[in-house]
Length: 197
Image (cartoon, rainbow, N blue to C red; front, side, top):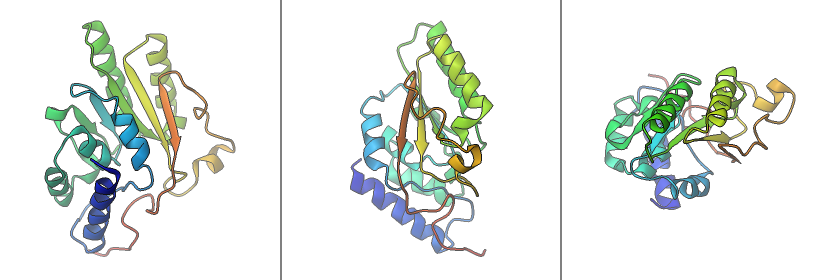
């Protein structure tokens, strides 16, 4: 998919949400299309993708049709999109995807596999103990996994850097980590309009 196609998809989903067509939470991407396209240049067909509640771009870039993704979002599954046939798993639980991703990477290594795990997390999630312990295990055991920290400068109510009174701990780490910052026009959740059902 192109940058324009990704933007058009999220714009359509935001409009659907703002018109009360989606009766469940959504979390939208904007402003990181180039970074995502660049990351997915290295993702192979049999690689695993583990996402958070914000996963529309990952699903589209891994090959799930826009029609299928939109259908599932309209059905209320935006924050839990899972497509086993594409090796895509999303979790709406903070850090919920991380231990599973690490376990899959361990299984691949033990079985001598050649595929790879890509685990997407937000900036606040990267500051949790769960992230640190799994990242450390992956580094020390040289597991076939890459953690992608997506820093959009937003958390639910308080900016991550304000919570921890510092710059992000993992922002300068390169071992099994890709870190990038981006600015988005969307709030942490929703399409920018208060919806009453």
